[in-house]
Image (cartoon, rainbow, N blue to C red; front, side, top):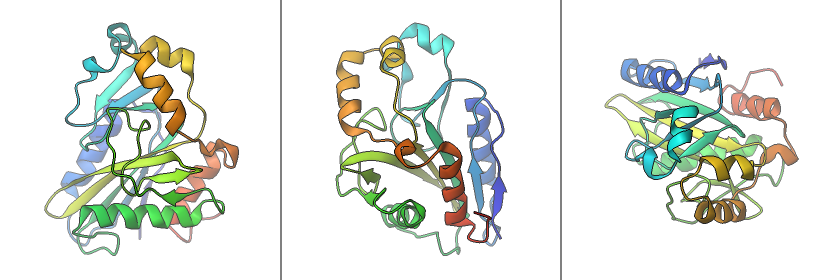
Length: 219
């Protein structure tokens, strides 16, 4: 039986603290957790090894809510996406020792709940400082562009999978104001990012995510 954490309006740090708590307290045999994020105000999160001051303009660092994720990956703006996490104990069918194959399995299950043609797995292996600038292996793609990505962190008895799926087009004027190097990032982001809002609303995408992992959830 899954535990569903519905969206609450939290700060970016509160969302990260919840995930860390879920991961650190998960024991083998415990019920897995699906945590749908909610954000109090415009925010971004960045990978555990990143330095946001090298990517975001100084004024925006003061204005935007932000937090370091316990997982890796690139910087993600939480204005146009649906963000969720999974915490899964060792021994569960969705827990695979090979992290790359675990990533593939989770995204394959999610693609199966999306509208036909709205998702396929990436075969690329690129990296970038911004999550949606370049797909990596087994990211979720649509029309050759990235719509979803994730990263994982593992402990002895459990894994944390944090994911972001693009719902709405990003706002270039906003990004021009907050990015440290907008002329470099914006063209790449525009060329590589798709959004599911063409076929799903934010609430419909959340319902797809819930049904993926909790099959008896109401449609």
